[in-house]
Image (tube, rainbow, N blue to C red; front, side, top):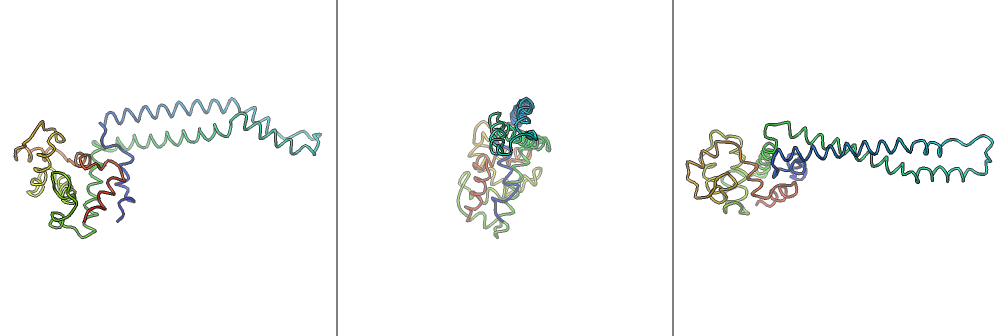
Length: 235
């Protein structure tokens, strides 16, 4: 398995999991509106210069000296270059492609109730599958390197975060133990003002929802390259 080729890991370059969802939607809507305005402007400019380009490309009269073929090519080329038709057309294609990409991204955000969380969950689940593929299990994760959040092995963090997101309402003891360490090291990331965090609060917090997004942000895995590099560093 190659993390850099994983679609779920690549989603980190499509959706910014560090953003507030409302802000992400608003930003995309603004970018789509700008792309649409660029498309309208470029389309109008192309329509305006079309007659000039058409005249430049119009066949020469039958009584035109045949020796002037090279001159005809010169004027046709000059007509296209001076009007900027080719460059404007290329800009129009780019703007349309950009608008389509942004629209697809916006639709992707609306695909789930918590799209940022879904992207993060996909990354964590892929990480767990990657570790399993390399022969890791719970015990090997506990003895692996490098260390990460709260001094826990990185593999252990990925492994137990996957278990947490898959079993939100009934976290197992090893999940609680792992997140007890993480929450006490980074209470603010879990909406807790300060530590120490009592064990009952840890358990209640875990049952509220999946915490993959917060874990990825704490790890710095907010891009495809960062997440892939993190996974391949595990020994």
